[in-house]
Length: 402
Ligand SMILES: *Cc1c(COP(=O)(O)O)cnc(C)c1O
Image (cartoon, rainbow, N blue to C red; front, side, top):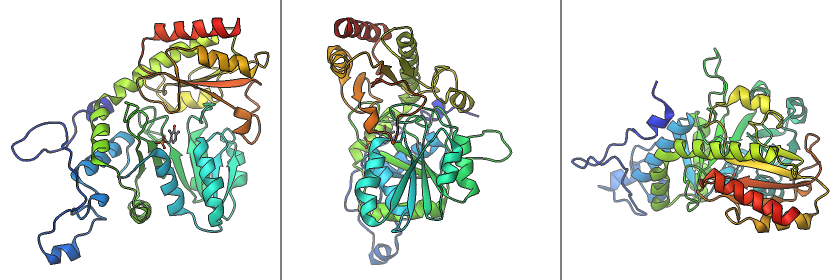
């Protein structure tokens, strides 16, 4: 079988007759002209058999949808204006008043905020579960539970859950599970085929991806996708997508199409630099704990080993450190301010390394038992030279903490 790295480059897009360029064209439209009234009445946008209106798809967005299905091993794809919009589309499509959604306690923060700020007002309740304990998930599932969110690794603290076990808990109870697959990006593991080669396939029902991160790779596009392998589930999500009018612009779609062929290469390079820097941080006395799933003492390391490629390309470019309580918040802030190459900013997956200090206590229902007390700082590693990034960390530690 051809490797994903190759299929992301040699794709089946066919250019217009007589123009054999490999890069897909950019087609922009609101209006699409119909040949006659009968066609106007009969063309169906839902099955993609005909173009009807720019919001419902263009050759450019259809191509990107196909490319992303290839990346993640899905069959249907929706594109949305941000990763968070993709998360919201799943929730608004599948949840109704009286329903409950379960969210891992270490989920991407705005997913929790969506549940608190919007879903609750619609009569949809939510509960947080401990993603490192499948029994806790099983115990929290109630007759009202309609959707379970999964995330691997967890946001900011990067615990790696036993994803197969969490999916099994949902499947045994017939509850839909949606994975925020931004970290794995379709490269570290296959979300719809978690046990390759096993007699029975095991996979999530829905994979949501913030294309803003690695698929864009440039720090200049906001986009999200919702990928499925079930036509009726996809149709439900698609109708919500249509009713909310969540289309994406052709220029943004093209930017992602342009970046996809280099994505596996970039992911591997981010991974390599991140593991090197996480190891270096582990050797430093200034940190109480370094969190990266490939480190043997990081929470869930065994689950990461079981699911992901252990060689480079099996982990994203994120790691966090916990400064011990002997350093004040002001000292940790001074460290972040002293960094020169690492910039203070949100997001990840772009060429520039970023740093964010987090107030972890305010983000979790309780302080996770597997984490040391202290102040957490997350790094997103870009594509700069590792030696330069390490020197930057070193000088900031020296100037802020000594
Ligand atoms: C960034 C991110 C999102 C949201 O993506 P946006 O395009 O910024 O809205 C969702 N989930 C995870 C894990 C992310 O890192």
